[in-house]
Image 1: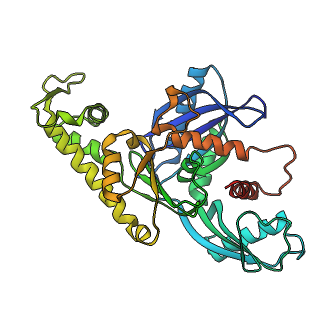
Image 2 (image 1 turned 90 degrees about the horizontal axis):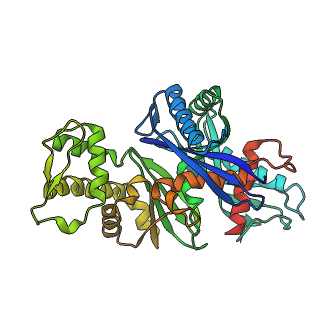
Image 3 (image 1 turned 90 degrees about the vertical axis):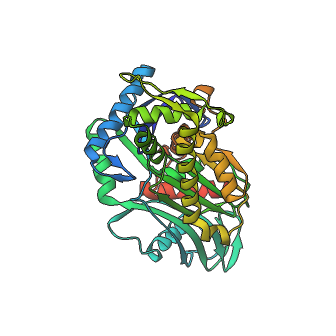
Length: 399
């Protein structure tokens, strides 16, 4: 894979973000450039028009090509939202040879877990993520390959998406000349960038423009993944309504506000919030503060309310916060106060300063996922889907 280039494409509800990575022979990733484009055809986590969405993706890829002077058309796509389904399941089999559990046995036990989960026939399985293995009812800490046993069992987290949705999007992307090597759930992509304590319980919270992706880790493995139609767009909408301005203008003011010192409140500060063709948008900082902070407080409360049952059942140690809104200090403070636990902004340490932002965490995670799943010459698995599953097995073993 020396010198191989691959695109990591994060399909967000507000923007398509692309990172072009150069994959070294040691599986290192060097970012060669990036690109972005406003998202069309993807609203509140639901694909409304796959052709228009594919065009947005192609335009973001073109931006990357212009920025790097490199034409790369192989990509891994990260997508989230409300059309993804996730469930926990248990699969069990009798190994073909009792004194030697093989890779084929591992494939079979994963398949058994998908059958027990009753994944609809019209769904495509994106991920089967192992949580626990048991051999003859005894817990194993890693992959039980080559162990002896007459009974093999796995507890797994399974993520799927409707085949029609996936196939239409992939076809429309490939019709525009971009080859889709694989598709990953964005929530899973974010976790690729986080190296947790193997036995830890923690929450990953990816707050984007139109959706919030949540991943709950239990004993160091994914126990829950879900999405909510909540995000930074709610803040933008309130600013737009409160100041009687356009959406684009409100979005710029939101980003401007995120850079301001909260100590300005109560000092009768007036902000110049004018943009092109406006001359009368001089806004009280206190008024803008009340708009933004009240909405952030509400969003964090709703997120907490959505998973409070799981929080009561599982003592968490930390929350990793990322996504476009992860850069806003108010979210960090509100999450810490509401969840009563420490919060860490998840930004991959390997990224250069120009790419080091919570907005790029999922995109970089897609590239890390790609490195693990790019076809290798010695690979002979019959199905690319099972190759992805076995890659996740190897990841489990490293934890």
